[in-house]
Figure 1 (cartoon, rainbow, N blue to C red):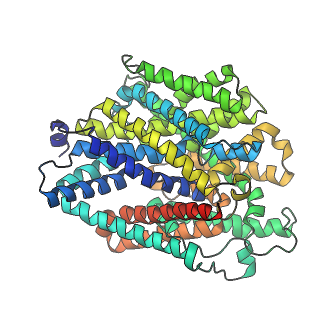
Figure 2: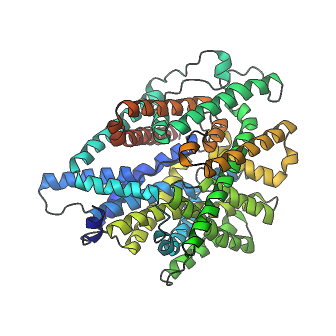
Figure 3: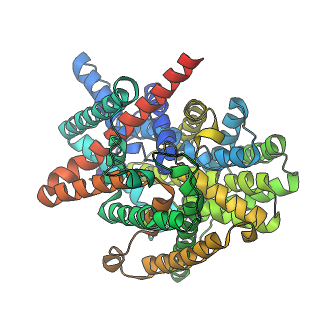
Length: 576
């Protein structure tokens, strides 16, 4: 099946309809990732949604009109490249360093400078991916699981057209249900946030009527879901009451209801420490293994091809360096230092994604923060925004590498994929920034609250604070918590990387365990419920889960998040 597709002639590829379809889907799907990133710190790869919707629309039109211009395999690939590039724009900083910068400095970027910054960081990642492409795609040890999942879906819908139509109905049905629930909850009748007792409600143990959270639970799997449950019980059910009983956290006089904002100021420190240390330890082991396998194969991790798009790369460097100086007052020498670091860390991220399918964007961001904390101690703009360059370019680089993997398998034209990716980030930058500004008009008041926990923002802010003011600025109890959580994180990261896969799956997920300290317990409980429901259905009806679980979950995520963004815009216009 693969060989047939790979040798098929390229009929239509970068067609106007493929590009416009990708742009429209990017406009629709980008706000979903901004919304989800601010809610739970995770985002969703939109490639498969874009494939299903694009195929469903155009094949349906061809059948109805009787035209002899079918929607080709290569047009589908361009469509998903544009849409997924737009939706992956949040790695450019919209849900992490940019809000953290506002919280720490009080400076909020205006819309146009923010669009320019997010675009330039992502644009740099595209050209790094272009130069990495030959060496990484020819490395047989790198499978790029996420790209292969997109490829399998692409080939499957062209071989089984009726299956694509069925999946599209499931996707749209789930999206409509989720959107309706969110609309009713926002405008018509707020669903009660029930809790068994006032004490549990104070500790954020309430029922959250969010189908988006159930959808994410269906995607993350039973191991991560149960770890979130364990983390919520440990952080909010165990540490929370202990902190209140011992006076380590004081509630405001006369306070009632969930006290997320007060408790998370303490709990985020062990949570962030656990996530960062486990991810860096795991990354170190995986990179060592990749280095050994590369040397054993007689290859090199970096092969520079002939300089074709040098002008694009040079333009990206000029944009990133000049915007750091103009927008954040970073001196040119320090801004130039971000480029080699971004190239190295994007190469690291691309190799890790190729081997595991898991983009270590959070770890790359924290690693770059640590690097700039050593080079320029005490400078918040450098620590956040120079590090944002490395994290943002790494995110876009890994997204394009997955698309290059799909393109190579079906015989697509690489430079046309790059054009599609650039169009995607251009659209995504504009839509993503306006979605962020609509959702969070006042970051100081709205972020790190129960409604907008923004765990990625909390992580970047905490690391920047620690590197700027030092651990001495924190209370003794927090310093102890950081030390214990860091040791536990390193241990989990090492075990996860070194144990055989069949044993490692019984370990708690370090990322999920740390995340549960930064999210309200109600969010972790709902995601755990989604994971348990999906697992139970898969035990009874495995074929149904295999066909529809991801599709239904994607619909639940897209429906609620798009409605949530629309509701925020409506309320903003009404208040205006």
